[in-house]
Amino acid sequence: MLIRTAILFPILSIALAAPTLALAESEMHLSRGEVGYTFYPNHVKSTKTTAQVMQELQEAKADGSYQQSLVNYPAPAKSVGPGKTRAEVLNELKNITPAERARMQAIYTKGAG
Image 1 (cartoon, one colour):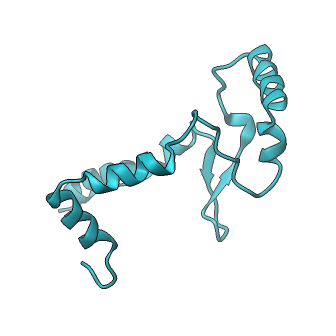
Image 2: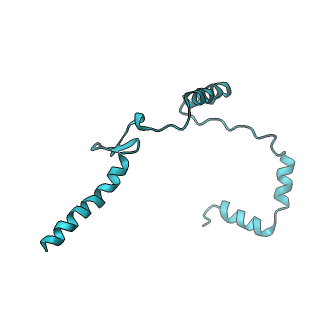
Image 3: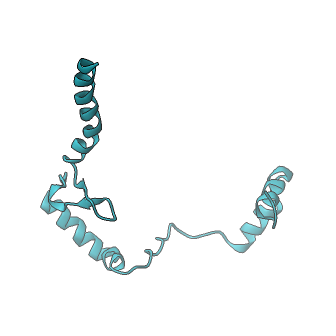
């Protein structure tokens, strides 16, 4: 019994410590605070060069997405081209199959589901 305890205790200790050891390699470390982890930005391994990051920053400033990221509002959707006309939408609605109409009615009818 004593030998089995002497063998199993270190194995169990290693098994429980393994996840914590894996976190030591990352930028997140466990902490005793409310959050449960602490972020260490100097532990982040970057795959980009400083020149690449500066180029991306200049592009973001040029297209306005950098300024938008400073505000707590979502960025406006980029236009993908002209949309459908009202006549095109109405024509599609008139020409849907009965099965598709039943599916849409089940989804969008109050109390469905």
